[in-house]
Image (cartoon, rainbow, N blue to C red; front, side):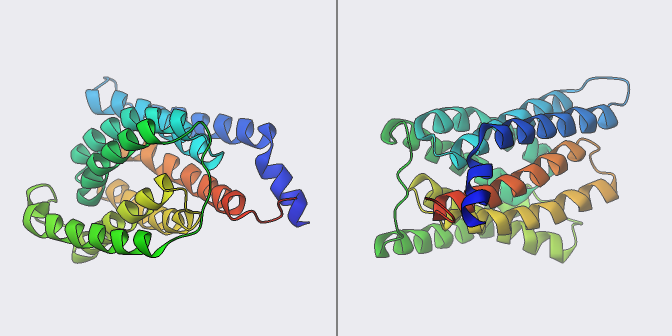
Length: 231
């Protein structure tokens, strides 16, 4: 059974169906968000949604250089969109991810070699979390709406810390990074649903759809990178 799961997730059929479903969800949510006029946020959210799905799929399948190159472009779109959405954690994550993707583009090979976490990785992760906390403490209030509930602020902080550490570990080729992404996706789902319920941005439907697809891909990536069922 393990080998069967591995073969299915590794197949082009799975990737094709996942991508088709993801694009369909983004198109449908874009249509839902359309209010008679096309604004910049609607267009950039649509483009960012498509790019994001392609990028995470490439990383899940361990395509290092190609995924990193597209990642730089995708991170720029995500940074802009999340700034407009008011998602504090994701704004800083976008800037940070763009830098890491750029590093990955120049240092990674065609395929990602999955390796074990080292003490050095743990130390660097701790430093990243510390620096991230300082950045949020001093600059967070300039982006996050002042009337946001405390849980939204806490979730933004959590998603920031989890994602910056997971991003670093992913570019370093560590399988545990995908466990972090699974957790981050759950947090992002809660934040996107909050935005939709509040009516602050109808285009948040696009990112909600994208996050659902991200979660499916993160589960797939965790299985493949940990080699569950690999022959």
